[in-house]
Structures are given as C-alpha cells and as structure tokens.
Length: 406
Ligand SMILES: Cc1cc2nc3c(=O)[nH]c(=O)nc-3n(C[C@H](O)[C@H](O)[C@H](O)COP(=O)(O)OP(=O)(O)OC[C@H]3O[C@@H](n4cnc5c(N)ncnc54)[C@H](O)[C@@H]3O)c2cc1C
Image 1 (cartoon, protein in one colour):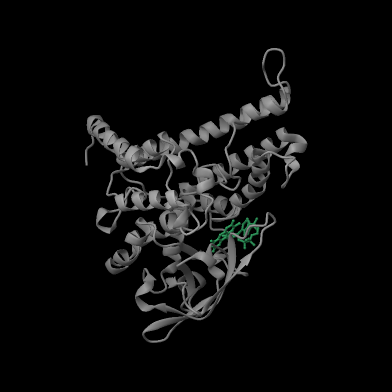
Image 2 (cartoon, helix red, strand yellow):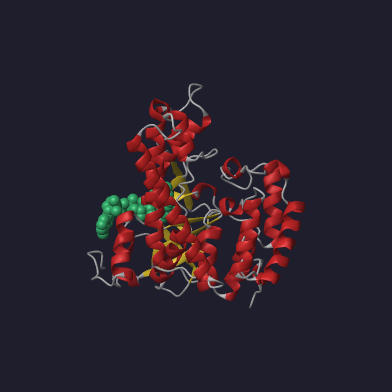
C-alpha cells in the first residue's frame, strides 16, 4: 500500500478520536503499575475494559492480519497508533496479559502455523483472552538448548509428553505453552526436535514456582508426566522444531531491544535529575562531581544512540517488519544500556540505594534497587550475552561455527 503523508494524517485523526473515546482517564500515565498485574484476572476493571476494547479493535496487534483479529495495518499506520497511544499516556496491557502471546508465539504461528492453527489461536491472542508461556530451557539444556531431553512419543491420535522444563515464565498462570520436545532420539541433536503447543489445563502438568531473591516468583519448574498434546498442535513439521524454535527466539530478542528491564516499577526519573538531587550542583548549576558527570554523559549518549538506532531500524523496515539476526546486536546493546543505567542510578543514590523495603526509602529508591537486580536477568533470558555474541559472530560476521555444534 502506498501511503501519503495526507492519508497517514487522516488516519492519525481517526486514531486520536478513538483513543480519546476509549482509553479511561483513570489509567492515564499508569502503565508501570497496571502492567505489573500478571494476569488478566488480576488487572483492575478499567484496565480490563481498556484491554478488551483495544483487543476488539485489533490494535493490540496492529500489523497482524485482520482476518484473524489483528488490526491489518501497515507498519507506518501501526507506528501512528503507537505514537498516539504514547501521546495520551496510554499503553497496551495485552502485551503483558497474553504472556509470550503477542511478542513471540503469535508471530511464529502466523509464520509457521496451519490455517486451522491460525484460526484457533491467533484471534484469542489478539483479544487478550489467553496467556502463553514457553517451555524451552531444561535443567541440563539452557544455552546448549539443542541438548533438551523432554520427549514426546506418538500415541496414535496424540503425543505423550514426559520431562522437565525450568525457568518457564508464567507457567503457573498460563493457558498454553509452546514446548520444544525431542521426537527423534536417534537423529543428530538439532534434527530430532519438534515444537508442540500444549494445553496447560490438564492433570499431566505440574508447575512449581521458583522464588527469586526479590520475593517474586515470575517463573516455574514445569513437569510433564504423561501430558497430552494433540496431533494438530505441532507447529511446523515433525522434527523441524529447531528452525521454528530459533525463529521464535528472534522474535523474543526483537521484543527485548528497548533498554528497559521492566523490573523496577514506578516512575523513572532522568539520571541527570536524579544526580542533581542526590549528589548536588556546583555554583554554575552543573553536577558537582566531574567524574560522575562525564560517566553520566557517556551513558546518556549511549542510550540516545540506542534509541535512535531502534527508530532507524523501524523506519527502514517500512511495512516489512521482519526480524533477523541483527536483533541479537540490539538485544545486547539494550542489556548494556539498561544495566549501566541501573548501576549509575544506584551509585547516585548512595546509601539510599541500599534499601529493600520500609518507610526510610521512597518508592523511586526501592524501584531503583529492584531495577538494578532485575536488570541482571536481561543478559541471561532470551539467550545470554555470550550466546548473542556467538550468533553475531556466526550469522552476521560469518565466522566459523562455535563449539555448540550438535
Ligand atoms: C528472567 C528469566 C526468564 C526466563 N524465562 C524463560 C522462559 O519463559 N522459558 C524458558 O524456556 N527459559 C526461560 N529462561 C531461561 C533462559 O533462557 C536461560 O537461563 C538462558 O538460556 C541461559 O541458560 P542457563 O541458565 O542454563 O545458563 P547456562 O547455559 O548454563 O550458561 C551459564 C553461563 O555460561 C555461558 N555460556 C554457556 N554456553 C556458552 C557458549 N557456548 N559460549 C560462551 N558462553 C557460554 C553463558 O553465557 C552464561 O554466562 C528465563 C531466564 C530468566 C533469567
């Protein structure tokens, strides 16, 4: 579709009108706390109603095909929707309440799914009616994912699944899980894996939440004991799960390029303002600590450069939002920017950056500590920092295969 500036501006006016009518004023600027609700049920009623409206309009998944419940918009129109959502302090709660549905599973079903699978799963994701988790990692298969041993055996009209996954985010609240299973134990590691979509509401699955240092339990150990997966819930061909699973990981990385760990909560003050408040200014109004000033400047420049690179990548994609190995570069850059920011914030806060709870600390101070700790996970989940570097070396720089060949 060719889009003129004029047609986009007409569209912008339509979006603006719809948002003003549909987005509840009570939620304005409250993305942080509302998005902290882990499930659809836990969200407050205005957020629920807003999520439902956004889902029905198809704008929670603006570029997905309209025939499956998406917005059917071009990349440029979707950018307009997102800009207008930001402009009025709104947000997309379905990114959170569908688990991995919008960011990872949905795009992969759209690419590899059969027509029946698309019709069965995509509309529910678009409307925010279903929470998806992902069962990839196992106790003995993390970075070396191809060593996974959870197996699925053909039982005629269905698959029987046995094994253990770990670090499964949201498994205990999920309706469906995308699981990598071994379907051919005799084939070379990567050629004997399939991708199954498994209904989590069944007696053959047990989830045990893992408690984090911060008290929360965002992920689980997940046990499959003769769990059932339907024959028509295999995504992609039998034993082609490695390709499907890798593609999904590219979508995961692409969704993790924003340089925000999302684990701090609360409002984020700029580092410069924070430093002026906690460290103080000299008689010219500049941050009094010259060394900190130069490190802060470097961090802010890096964050700005990262933001501009993301904008350039989005602009270059114009109507063609394909993910690629370059997502690994952006994910690593995002992790570094977010982690440096959190380190600096803690340094600036001094002893106020040592609190975990209690009245002696403000919500922003406690949030900064959580962001610092939570941000460590950024360079682990979705494939660790070193694994992204391996991917960059092999798939972008064309260097020889690493030791993981299986
Ligand atoms: C917050 C969070 C949420 C997660 N959610 C999910 C989820 O929903 N579903 C899921 O399946 N998994 C999930 N994970 C698991 C995540 O994918 C793994 O933790 C990750 O892939 C690393 O695997 P591992 O923990 O086994 O570490 P290991 O693979 O044991 O790695 C340990 C260290 O060795 C390094 N290393 C390993 N191999 C190499 C190599 N070849 N070259 C160089 N360095 C190497 C790694 O970089 C790392 O520093 C989550 C993890 C976190 C932290």
